[in-house]
Length: 237
Image 1 (cartoon, one colour):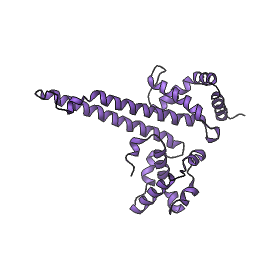
Image 2 (cartoon, one colour; image 1 turned 90 degrees about the horizontal axis):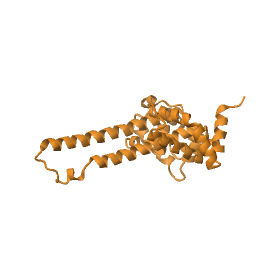
Image 3 (cartoon, one colour; image 1 turned 30 degrees about the vertical axis):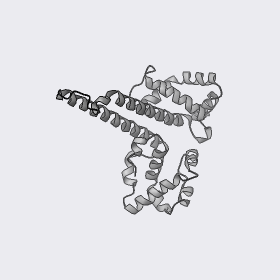
Image 4 (spheres, helix red, strand yellow; image 1 turned 180 degrees about the vertical axis):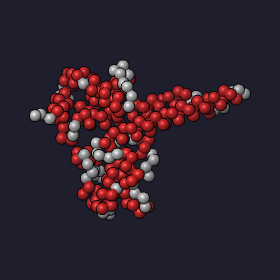
């Protein structure tokens, strides 16, 4: 019996060979891409939504860069879709902030004789920027939660496996920093779909027992730094 995932992977590899094959693949997988995008966003998505166009472009990009030996195509495509949607949300958030924030409101050119107008403007700026910031983090957390599932990690497990003492926090921080030292271990991590433990321990003074105790925390921290999680990354020390 043939493996359905292996067949999907082969179809993806074949689709990347020509623009015509890619277009046929994207057309035939429209329903699949819609469902995947809806699952990522946790809301209904139609083919007339702008986000669906973003998802199609992301799948096209995934076809160009996919390597069969690195894992299932649709798992990889989901990561690219999440990343591109987050990029689009950030770009739109930045643009909307610029639109709602009139430079005159900070240059003294507004007539503050009408106090209610000034208060309303400031409240609207605060409300809009707060919403966009919250949405950025919300989508990032949802994307991270989905990606962690591929590694057998539940987001809600992290408090239990996070370092508690200052000494262990420092050791974990040092290990994560060394992961990205030249030559970074990023490609090895992506290829193996798991942490290159031996290589990481060689770069630090951490012992294997401590590593195993905090493996999920370390893996999550590295995923955040490898992916498009700038908002969450800002909270990492």
